[in-house]
Image 1 (cartoon, helix red, strand yellow):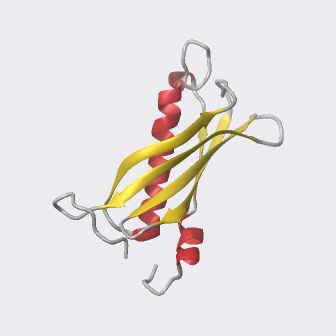
Image 2: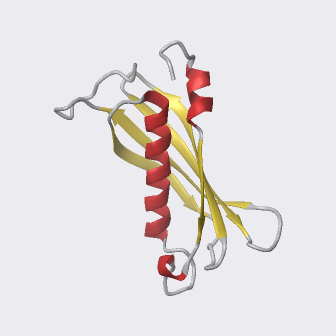
Length: 131
């Protein structure tokens, strides 16, 4: 990606999608996806999205508006989608949506949403401009 891309082009190029199976090793005592595992997956997809957007070292500084709307049972598929939603001088926000899909049925449902905020940093950990 070159410096000449517009912000909107960078956003489109950095959209990241990952599908995962909810295996028994990722569930809790209710036989649904453990919330901490879902958050780790969301943080990872948001970090990949943010890095693809600006190609700078980044740190997660906060999360907000994490909403779990539906339990995710073992033996299902989830798709995580990350997209940059806000761009500042040194920081950006990535929206992450998690979709639930049954293995043997069509369709999907948005079951988790959240926002992850990142800051670009230098070798000393100080904020630097995204571009």
